[in-house]
Image 1 (cartoon, rainbow, N blue to C red):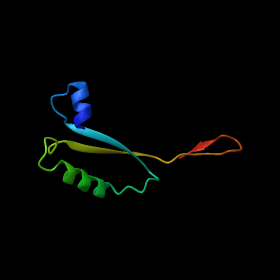
Image 2 (cartoon, rainbow, N blue to C red):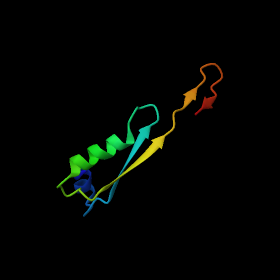
Image 3 (cartoon, rainbow, N blue to C red):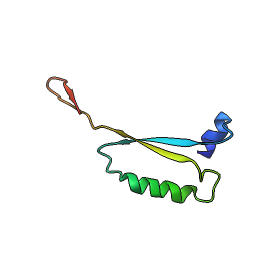
Length: 68
């Protein structure tokens, strides 16, 4: 976050958005807890973590049909 903040000249980081694939087996609460632990007592302590779930998609090899 610090590198991106500095590269773009952002004075403060209010939120970070993470896209998580449905098949990645990420536990949202665990990711929240890890983020809070990593940012505790840093300049990013008040930064909000936003998690966006990306649904799984499959494509049929025979007909090319996509399904979620």
